[in-house]
Image 1: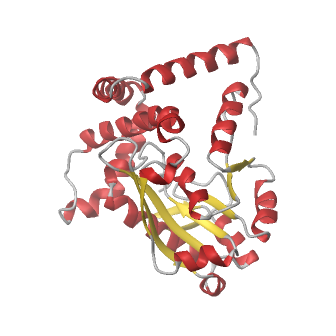
Image 2: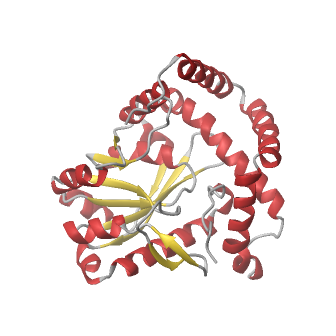
Image 3: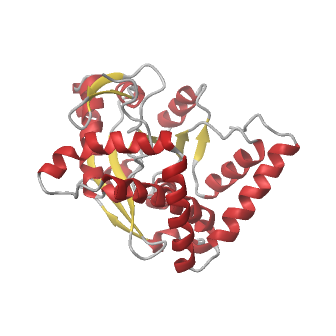
Amino acid sequence: MLGKKNGPGAWVQYIAARCLLGGASRMPRALQSVLVGGLARIARSADKRHSNAARAYMRQALGCAAAEGLIGPDIEARVLTAWRHFLQLSLDSAAFDRVVGQDPLAHVEVERCEGLDELIASGGGGLLVSPHLGDWEAGSAFLGGLGFEPLFAIAKPPKNRPLSRYLQRMRAQRRVTFLPRRGGIELASEGLKEGGWLLVLLDQRPRKGGVTVPFFNRPAPTERSAGVLARRLRLPIVFFHCLKEAEPFRYRLRFTRIVSKEEVRSMSIEELAALSNQEAERAILGSPEQYFWLHDRFRQDP
């Protein structure tokens, strides 16, 4: 889980990033808002690739909602909001452990779906599936305290080795064991067999080997590994997401649906992928201002 770049240049980048984020995260919230707003405007203009990806994604995803009167038509304002949200998440992540401290559950309101407590108490483990909505890094910090232990996640580390080492320590503090992409599924399988939980973010375009199912009324390549793993190991799937509240460092953790292991076994991989997309759609439309729109979700699709 460590990046490969470890020379003097990598250390300069790491120290600069830590100083910038650490200093900005200690600013008064009002001053932070001014800084984030200015940086968001610069990013919207300078990073055309991600901004254009957000515009295309929003037009596809929010078009029907706009027709139904659920959202406004101002895409440019929403792209700016998407950049603001992403930049604020970076600052909040740098300050999270310092502000939240040793009692993270004091900062979160939990909405439980039917059967959640019984599932945790059973000790059988399963998959936790969320879109990139709200503050997914903060969300992972609350799961261990609710009984989702041991908790695993699979991620690609930053290329900068000192930065990847720092992120690994930070996530370990939050009781999450991150596994490398290469061989991560096999390692996660061993933990799941022992009653562990695997945290999966499934709303982005898969690198390879996905299935094509509808996402916001458009055929979209979708990750299949979660469904394959759940069917193979006979595990339940829990859908959830962690939203930011208006007050800084206050959160709402929403568990929206459980797919039992019996239901999982009765569904095909395509049906499980489509269900995951449907759950993501509902969550995203509920709080579109907190979604990570800057991903090129429909790249190269006709």
